[in-house]
Image 1: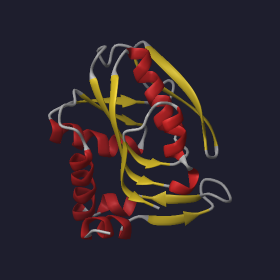
Image 2: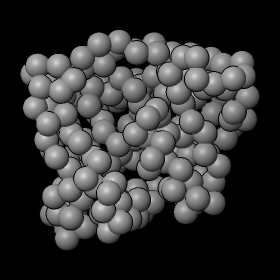
Image 3: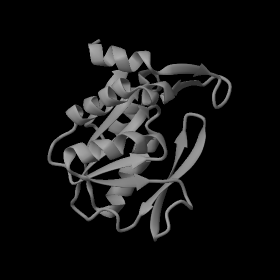
Length: 177
């Protein structure tokens, strides 16, 4: 593990039984509170990204935190993918299963032009549901999902394998646990 990865990993707290019994929640708030840690995380995500990106997409809510500074660093636009009822314009939606329930994501129908090269950024890759639903939204829009970069991959939940089944195979993680 590199010094940067050790810094990041040391600032992520495990919270047992949240949001329900049996789930080990990865709390990134200590990482965000540390300028050195947050900067290291953003730098690592930027370094993992291809350079010819038009748009960086971040999913609600913690994906926003990382995707926006990555977009700025890459000179790309940022598009938020949100829960239903949070965007004012015409939206498209995709529902999916989480490791502890169901969710729906939405995006403005006209937020990304067809053919745009898109980088998806999120904090955690768990079961792959959030990224998979986002990939489906991008397909509906005619965008090209070029790469997915996450801060942390929970490999025991096999999200990467699920994404491969959905045709999403260009995924990197700063940390794998």
